Length: 283
Image (cartoon, rainbow, N blue to C red; front, side):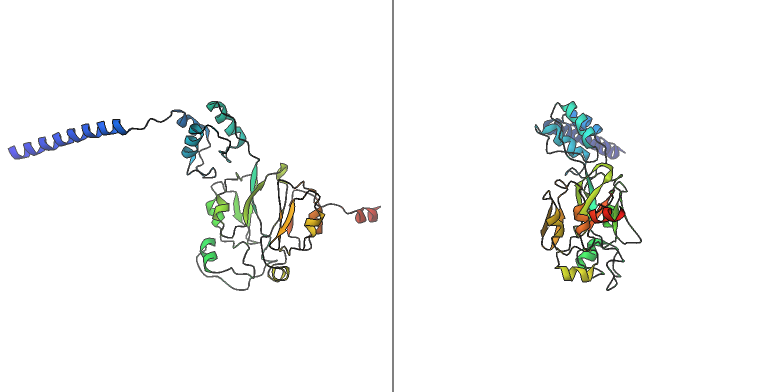
């Protein structure tokens, strides 16, 4: 009985001594945290999507408080309104960034891009892309297994069962960039968000020569440069056999749309231009 009591007392003394030692160690090495970090984090949307470049909202809040210049820091989910409130609270200049939206640059639907083989592996774009080019003759197009869908925390992107392509719901998209990082083919990019979700872009990233592209996909860009020549704003460039429209230079004039022989330039929320010949015929 005496031995048991001594054992209990010894353990209690060791516990108390350890607690005291840990307390002094904690006091010596404790890090004072700016209380503004908590308040800043509360102002952020709490999505923890990583679109800002930090692992979560806490990381961004810390950076916003500790940085003298916050012009390079931005929460795409909260937008300018959120960043404006935070900047006002911290007494710093609010960062400005043009609204963006995720865009899938592939128009190779099942109809336009027929299958040449069948894939029976894991339903993952990353795995399928690492194993081979894909089920069609185009090695650049959307695989359609939905890695981007799983990566999106806002339910803004889905795979269309009819076309087999990923489609973005612009009203839900926050431009966090998660789907961009998830796509192993690199066909999803963040582009300027126009009013009423209007857009004009080249829905192809194939770098193959025109004849090869046409054989694999009837909606692919053949690099003919017709769109580049007709653009008055220098918004279109053709490199590596594929055209690219710079959304910051594009004025949505739509001239390029009618010039594209394959329909690779996609137009959303806009009506096609009426050619002068058609107007004369109507008269």
